[in-house]
Image (cartoon, rainbow over all chains, first blue to last red; front, side):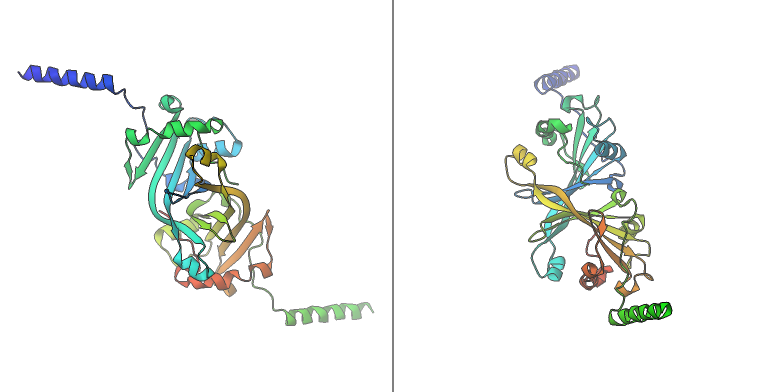
Length: 163
Length: 163
């Protein structure tokens, strides 16, 4: 009876594997030291996102950005730090105008890690999304690659380097 | 005759000095390496400014920010990199929505340099503003100090550190 149960379980796992092909690998841990990386650019996503953010790069990414090296070499990592786009009452009081928006509560940190072998299935980039330090899973990250694939001319990277 | 001319010149200089008290010193050259400094936060100034920017800090400034050290110690330098707040047609096309704004043309870079002796007349901070690499003069920088003086609780610094 016990062997039969184990066999059933084995069949179930095999069926599961056949129905859902393994998700491509993605970034499951936060790259060390990213908060000290150099500045690439800033962005503001209005509408539902209501987000303001900064993009930073590790040394390999920054070097590639500055030299215009495309595709980005293996080892390049790009980080996007997102915050709520938040009015600054403090600044507006001084300005005497409702004009100033700053980084409010942090919402998430996202990464693109270049490893052309490990992440071959997603254009050589591993995608990652972390909220309160916890990684998002495969289903959440599935739309990253097809969307970024539209930025083919810049090796799937949307953010341009700000001088 | 020659001595008389020199004397007249001397009197003219003295009169000039008496009429216009010397402007407090300000930052006249761009601190080296600022584009490699660590990230403090982002900001978006709407209305007439239409600006998006990043604030970076040298190691002394970043350490003070992270430790909550106030006042900032001598040697701290804070840089504000400003760009036109510019819609990204490229991103909007992918999103299918008019929502994405990025750093457009750079507009100016501003600095606050802490030196409690040199800049004693302006709260211990030297202010600087550079457009196309050229420094603004005393008249342009005059409003910096009285405005920043309103942020007394944070040692005249408006920008808070983003985690």
